Length: 210
Image (cartoon, rainbow, N blue to C red; front, top):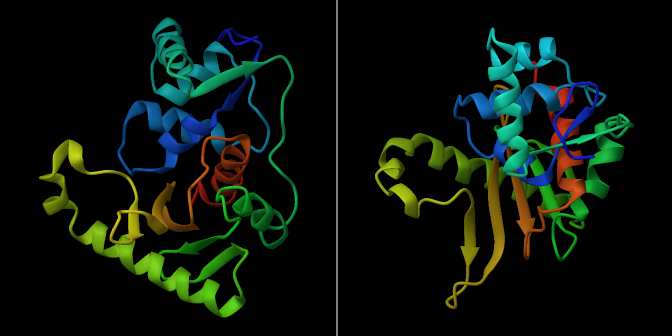
């Protein structure tokens, strides 16, 4: 069931979804993952599709990239296709956001601080956190050259922590196509589940080709 073979339908795992949006690098792996996530239905694997996603002219080389993504748990293949969660963003995103936190509270904002969706917060708090998250990630983006000097110590998210180092709020960049979004999570993040893949998939279908 999990072999990368022509005729199967590809889906991006929670880890693959994270790889696709956590950073804005132009790696071939990220391009493949985002191309698959931009499809409203799980695409069927073919040699032609693999070449289109990877930019390779040789089918064997193209399929090799996909196999490596499967081997590191970024891709999986199934016998039947799935469809992106239906509904408007206003209706479909809040339930997905709620599952990404152990407190069931999270906010998604655009780079200008406009709240796209929230779960668990009153409107005023959600709007304030949307603005705060966008500002924090804007600072990180502006200081990217300086932060790059930190090397392996630089992680993907930013936190609001107490004296014991426990984070009450964390802020996560999400790079969807050319769009950067800010995900704010209250409590412990829970990204390693299918609902995170569904959230990223919905966002990529909406914004990934912009």
